[in-house]
Structure formats: structure tokens, C-alpha cells
Length: 409
Image (cartoon, rainbow, N blue to C red; front, side, top):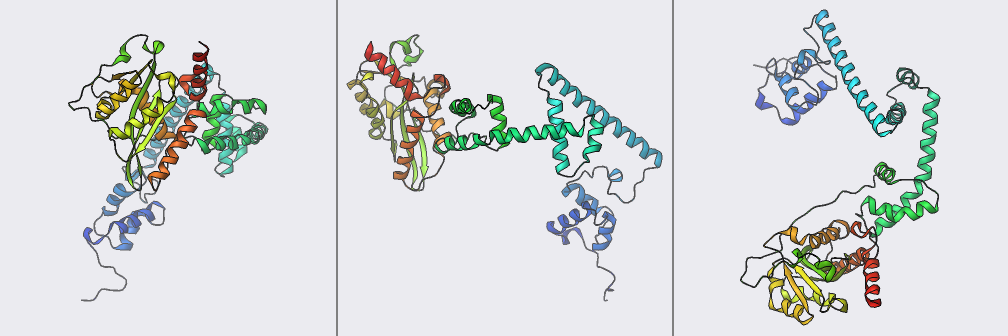
């Protein structure tokens, strides 16, 4: 039996692909077809099949089908519709009252003038998007069009004044792509004073956000410490009071880096009082012969000989004879964490994080390229990056000053 050309054969749910369902939902939600028209047009079986698709795949709220604005035949009576609209209006008034109350509290407690600033900004942006009429919006909120144009003019002048800051930010980001905003503000403050630009730290945050220049830290973790071995572990000397004042403290740790050739290991030795990385070595493995090379670089500075403590985790590299012999040869006392507790070696862990999250952001092809990147990054960290723990001075500046004081003493 042949089917009439004016009739479409009815199908079951299994006959429809997900793409077809999504297409029907999109056409209904755009208003091209009602759900009943779509059902008839495509010959879809079942009285509520399209509604099920809308509730499952739609972007609009189809949980109350007979109250939806795109529903073709609402079962509401005029009285019910009036009651619903009155209830929705009352809800909107309550919502506006709550929001206005929140803004009033902010204005009264912080003196931010937030209401007028955000109001003018929103009205102007909505006008540019052609969503509202400016005259009508100003009449509703009780401001004049002149005040809107004046405020916009001031904002444009301010934006032009601050435009030069972007070049300064990009200059420092060229060397330190992930540098935090507080440190960046410290670096740019002399330039702001020189050019007579009044901009506080919070305003600087706002400017970077508006220009899309804020950065997000990247976090990763890979365990590189094996502490369950037979070698001798040393006690944690950092628990002794006054140790940092009496002696230099070197902290060491190992972190992993990757290139196209595989996983590599970076050994670091840092002066805890100046935060300067005084020794480093990148190798293909974590053998003690490679890890000790970072220590040998650090002890070239004679200030550490005979008057220092070396603190690390309980990794077998640091407990090995070759590493301990190097410490003894330079008169440096070994100190270790109590078990596998990263918080007892927090400074070394923090230095690892700074290098990986702010500098070593790009994947190299070979270990030779990675060595160059590591060396450059450590130099920039030591000589250019302000440190919060050092009152926004660079590690190298503090390290050199303490060295000069030691020579004078």
C-alpha cells in the first residue's frame, strides 16, 4: 500500500537521531514552529514526545509547559493569568528591593559611590547594544542624559590616560609572564609617579581585569621524593629557635620538568633568608651524582662554609653518601623533615611553584633548550622579580646587601 504524498509516515522514538531531536528543539525554541506544529510537520509519534525533548535538551525552562511564552495554547484563564503576572511583578519588586538594599549598604559602609557608577555604565552599555532607549532609561532611574554623557566622557579620558600602562605591563610580562598583580604594581609604581598618573593598587587590579591582563596560576603535583629507605635520616634543625639568626639556612628540593625528550629533574638550592636560588642543576634522572651538582654551585659562595644548615626532605639523594660527604667537606650541618611532610620544607616547595607557575610555562624540544630556559628563568627570578617576603625587593638585591654587611662585620 502506497502512502499519500501529503502524509508522512509516523515513526517511533528509535527512528530519531540526537541531531534530529536537537534540530526540532532549536526550531521550536526560536519560535519557528510550535511544539504541536513540529509534531505534525515531522510526523512524530506521541502527544508529548516533543515536550519531552524540549525538557531534556532545551535551553529554556519547559518545566511548566502551559505557562511558557512559546506555548501555543495556554490553559490559563484571564483571571489566572492576571494573578500569575501580579505574583511575578511582586517577586521582581522584592528582588529589586533586595539588590538596592545591598548596593546601599556598600555605598554607606565603603563610600564607593557604587550605585551611580554602575548605573551609568550599565545604561550606556545597554544603549550601545540597542537594548534600551537612553531617554526612557534615564527617566526611570532618575538621572539626566547629560550626566550620562559627562560620565562617559570622563571614562574615555581616563581610559586614554591609562592606555600607556598596557605597554609597561607587556614589557614586564615578556620576562615574567605569570607575575602577580601586586608585584607588577610595585615595578610600575615609579613609572606611574614619573608620568603623574594617580592609580592605586585596587584601581590597577580593575584596569588589568578590564584589559584581560590578569593571570591565573597553574597548579600541578608530581611526587619526586622516596623517603622509605634504609639510609640515615637527620633531625629537623629548623625547629630550633633562633637558628635563622645564628646561621645561614640553605633549603633544597627536586622538581620535575618535561620536554619532548621526556621527563627531567631540576635540583634547586635556595638561601632561605634572601630567597635567592644559589644553586641549580637539570638532569635526566635523580641520581645523587646529579643532585649534588646544585649544592656544589651553591657552596662556591664562601659565606656558607662552616656556618650553614642544609635543610631538605628525606629523599635518598640527600641521604646518600656522596651528598652528605659534600656537606661535611664544607662544614654544613644536614637537617631533614620529619617524614614525608612537604610543609616542613615549604620554602623549597614554594620556589619550585614560582618557577613552574610563572616562568617555565613553555614546552621545549630538547633538554638543551630546557637548560637555557631554566637558566634564564632563574636569573630573572633572582634579579628582577620582587618578593613579598623581602618587602618587594629582589632576592639578588637582598643577597648582595647581606653579603656586604657580612664583609664589613
